Length: 233
Image 1 (cartoon, rainbow, N blue to C red):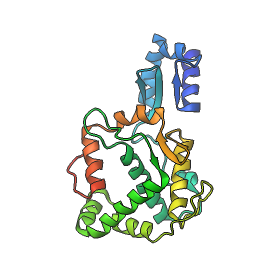
Image 2 (cartoon, rainbow, N blue to C red):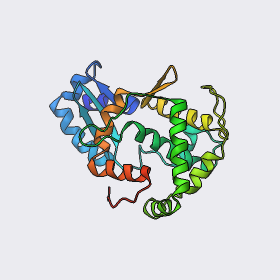
Image 3 (cartoon, rainbow, N blue to C red):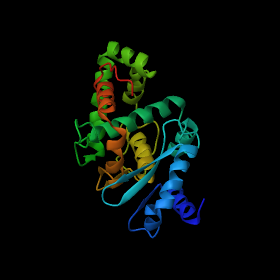
Image 4 (tube, rainbow, N blue to C red):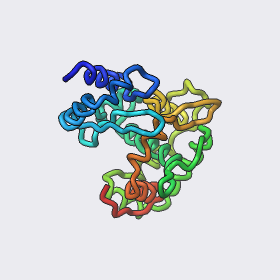
């Protein structure tokens, strides 16, 4: 591997992204470096997503065993005191937060600019109550996705509301759960929190269209609405 390609790889591994404001950008655009990265992508099982505006991201492929997170990594990032059911619940909470912002159809998946923490908890309460009231649909989703959404919804609704405080990370409160998943997403530069308003970052806006092709948007929309999806992606 030539020195330029090594520097570019190091920058990607350190930050997950580079942009044209970085000194390394010219190396990234070098033709020999691009050729070397074609081999690296195959050997290390990742993709490079380059977007307009001069930004590029290293993204592990779905089955990547080197860079992707497993349940152990997820538990470390949200707190070692979380029980297995809480881990599943926070995954569900995180997916619903992404869905809240990105369930637009067509080429524009982003459908809102921000949401307050209290409004999001209200919306997720309604989602869980809907799952409770539609047990048959939840059972169909369990067959499709291997997750018992009724149990997760019951767990969420059984939790106390909790203090409206960014420092509240109590796993037995709704606010504490939300603050934990938000801390993870903020650390990964996917969301920001300003004046109690949760907002997606430029990074998340850049990457979501690449993850949410038409089939996946339909799949996630059906999942969150309680319907059954036949999509294979």
